[in-house]
Each structure stands twice: as structure tokens, then as C-alpha cells.
Image 1 (cartoon, rainbow, N blue to C red):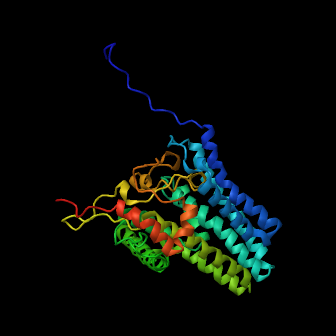
Image 2: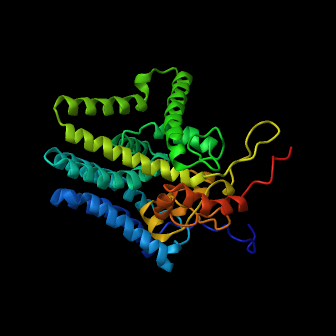
Image 3: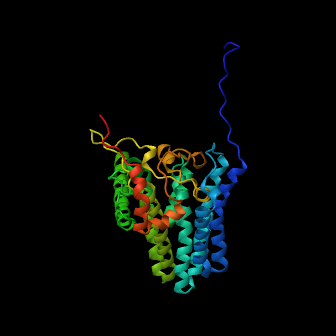
Amino acid sequence: MSASAPRASAPRAATLRACDLRYLGALTPSGFMLLIVLLVPGWAALAALVTWVVIVVLEAFWAPARRSPRARIAHPALSWILRLYVPLQLAVLAAAFWAARDSDWLTVLGLAYGVGFITGAQGITFAHELGHSPRRADRAMAWVLMACVAYPQFMVEHYRGHHVRAATHDDPASARPGESLWRFLPRTIFGSAVSAWRLEAQRLRRQGRGWLASPLTWCWALNAAVALALLGLGASKMLAFWLAQSAFAVWLLETVNYIEHYGLVRRTGPNGRPEPFGAQHAWNADHFISNSLLANLQRHSDHHLHAAKRYPQLAAMPDAPQLPASYSICLLLAAIPPWWFALMAPRLAANASPGPVSP
């Protein structure tokens, strides 16, 4: 090599910086809920509601909360935030089961809402991130988190179904233009379950294996065993708590799915296949608090374009379709279809595809 030839630049090393500490805040809601459940379980619903309201108010009215720091090289330590969350959620659930056993029914429902807020908003989000990990142990933890809310089919349908078919009419997790949340929910819950079992059956056939080799089978068997055991023990309040918190957690998941691709459709080419997924096929937001608590889930276009990226590396993509507010606010807006349609109609028109894909 000549003396004048430029040297190849060495890859930048991942370093922890002060801005990365914001992700530690993701452990705060679950830690707070654990203390509430242990000390004053009757306040669980109020604690979750106040947490949600505070986030909504800050992201709606505090200007600095509307922008997150730029994408950075992911330090390996940041993955441990997701892993440490798993035993924390299990502790919250165990404490809530114990509290529900001797509580009145109003407290049981409050526990279900408060804990479901945690298992749905963060537990499922972190399961989603861990499920994209190349590490088998991370993916196993993702299965555990999804079994906690009786929704293990997500672990098949999301990675092998949704990421292939997102923003097409074949995807049960992509909301169509003019489809309300309340019409979307039964379609996506039923369609995702059917798709997951079909995809898993195809995988097992290719590998020449039976259903006993499927984690989907074992997770559903575990869920059924827990439900039957609680019924057999006469622990009706514990069973009601678990089913209700699972239902609320799944509502949060599927409402986020509704928001993420609402009305955005990939054009179909002459061969009948959809165009490649692009940044224009997912809605994005870049609010600081939600991104810090939800592992940058709102940077959704980059996630679909680069599913192997770790969450600190996801880019904002300001030219991609932008939601009118953060996820914390859009969850509420989506629940009221006239408000949602009024806000999204002009945004959909601005991001409408011009026509079929050219040959």
C-alpha cells in the first residue's frame, strides 16, 4: 500500500452516553406497579391511569418531548434492559395473583387494568424486540412474555406473517382505509390466530416434525393448564384477573397494530405481487417519552425496513408518514372513530399511492 493511500476507517465502537440512560426509564412503570400491587393493590388502576395521563399531557404540551435523540450504535448493555424486564414482569404478575386471591371484585378488575397496562404496553413491546434477536435465549424470553398474556400466536404471526405481508390486504394486522378500530379488532385477532397456526404447520411439515416440537403448542398447553388449575382450585378471582389483564394487554397490542399501518397499502404490480415495503408504508412518531419507554417502537418504518436493527439504532425517518400525535395519544384517538378518521383522512390523502406499480 502506498504511503498516500487512505486508510480504511475502523468501525465505530458502541459507547454508552448520557442520552442512553433514558432507556432505563422503561423499567420504572413496572417497578412502580410492583410496589403498588404489594403495598396498596386497590390503587393499581389509579396508578396506571395517572401514568398514562402524565405521559399524554407531557407529549401533547411539552415541546421537548416531541423529539427523540438521533439513532446510535447499540451498546450491548442496552439489550439487558429488555432482559431484566422479564423477571420484573413475572414478579408483578405473581404479586397481582396473590393480591387478587383475597380482594373484592372491584380491586380484581383494577389489578387487571393496572397490570395489563404494563404487560400490554411494555411486556408485549419488549417481547416483540426480543423476538427479533438472533439469540435463542432472547427469543425464549419473548415466548414467556407472550404466554403471560395468553397470546403466544404473536410469536409466529408477527415474524413470519406480518413482516412479509404488512400494508397489504392479506395481512390481518394491517388496518384498511376507513376501517374502524372496533371492526379491525375481531378481524385481526381471529385472522392472526388462523395465520399463526397455518404458518407453524407449514414450518413443521418442512422440517418433518410433529406438533410437540412447536413452542406454540407448549405455550397454549401451559395457558390451558393454568386456567384449568385455577378453576379446579376454585380461584375464580385469580383466573378473572389473569384473563382480564390478558384481554387489556391484547387490546393495547392490536390497537398499536391498527395505528402503525392504518390505511397504507402497498401497490400491486403486474405479476400480482405487492411492491417492496418502503418507508411510506408505516406511520411514525418520534416522541421522547414513548420512544424511551417502548424501545423506539414509534420509529416503525425503519423497523420494517431493517428488522434486525436493535432498538437504539432505529432512525426517525421524518419523510415517512407521521402520526398526528404519539402512540400514547393515538391509542385514545383510535378508540373514537370519528376523531380518528377526521385526523387521518388528510394524512392518508397526502400519502396515497399514485397507482399500480409499473412493469
